Image 1 (spheres, helix red, strand yellow):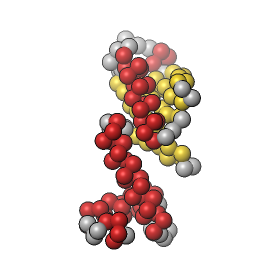
Image 2 (image 1 turned 60 degrees about the horizontal axis):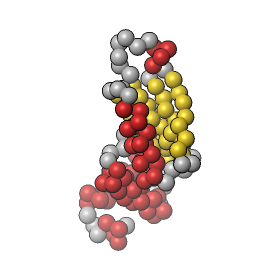
Image 3 (image 1 turned 180 degrees about the horizontal axis):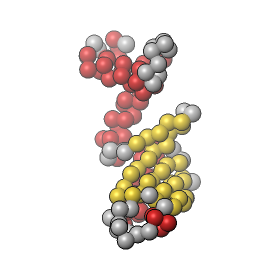
Image 4 (image 1 turned 60 degrees about the vertical axis):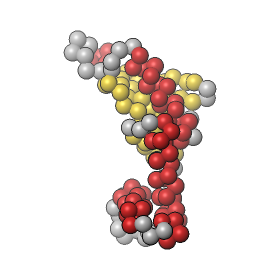
Length: 134
């Protein structure tokens, strides 16, 4: 790991945290391998690139090796959905994903819960954004 970190303690700690907490989910019975360390480095680099290129992603769910960007928005008018979908699509491009999620929280007191709760899919250019109203 010296080659990747040049002995920088902050980078060693970031890699160790990524491996133990994120990848092994604090299961200290599992061994830490050089393959896991290399994967952690790539994840950290990707995370930094994503923040630098497209803004800060709210959440990225990794399930069975696939990444699903999840953007969270508060309802602030009709433009909320349009801007949220555009932002989610940018994150999907950055992660190389074909599926992403947009959760929109509607706190308007005059809205009935039946109108606030919904799920629908928007398909654009071979990509699917699932929009969930809450």
